[in-house]
Image (cartoon, rainbow, N blue to C red; front, side, top):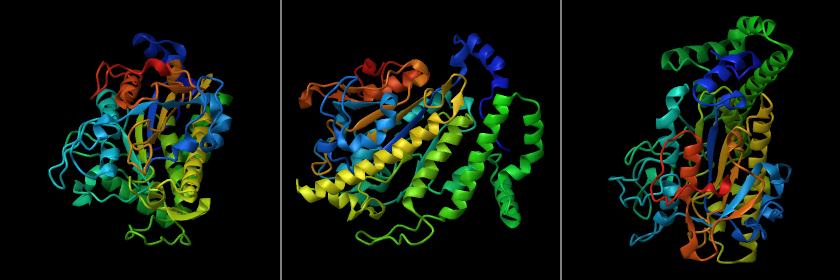
Length: 439
């Protein structure tokens, strides 16, 4: 089975549905939301733009996003108060990731875990029944789910940002091939394994199994839909081929060990495959909410493909050394270039007079600001997309006055995004009000 993108031939029924539910016309396109999590904080000196408003100048770190300056806003002045230690020594990385989308103070324990439901799962509970998958959880990092990881905190805290309940993390899928098979299978484990075996035996694409149906469909729709279908099927096949070439992610390595980047696997390709798969999932309305952990907090991955051979976590403890800060800025800028790739992909998918990015919200950031201090105040945050016209991008929005006591709970942003996704609530975790500065 291959899910279809929204076609013009479908719009009459979608318009009728929108009108019946209080919308109209273009509002028939659903809203989507992706949370992209980066570890270890940022070099805030090169991250934060110097001016605010719509005519702000991009900071050096965000320069790769220049072609999309009107498609996103930089938000400063947000804080995660519940990631403070509150008497629990150490564990800044575990708290950063586990509180990022839950905004609750986690219990310090290696076995008796206690966090809270995350924002993505609040949304999945409200609207997940409208799609094949209530939510999608992705990562480029192997997760250790048992035992103690960070100063006595359960490993489950450090490797997960999505939580179904206070005690149940949503484990992320790491292998692009397995995510792809989930999206383009019938959700049956037995059938999926059988179909995968047949494809591998005969070196076939999922498209080969639906070729006749696709040809019939293309003969019964207009020229615009035929072009859209051709672009969509081409994108599917390109992802399949890249998955085959990328190989599998190598197993976790001990602290300080250098991975072998000469194998088929490459981290940049892995990351972009996950962005491509999220684009396909949103395009086909297979899910409307996704989380993507680029790497777990505390990850010491080196970035030789960006010119940095030292580990990320090591550099984040820069102690204000110029060389470490410079290398940290290079990593931050490389990450920004990958976000630019994702925004390109979303903008390439047309939806009526708009595009997929116009109907989406992409929240991009880290659970820490300055990794050296494990600070969770003035958290680096970007919100891209227009959410169907309910968000005004293209600005640097400072929601605080610079004083620690004036920082706004990041839960206010979570609440604002939840409401735009259709969740009928006026409170989430420690929120004080929905962050309407993004409107």
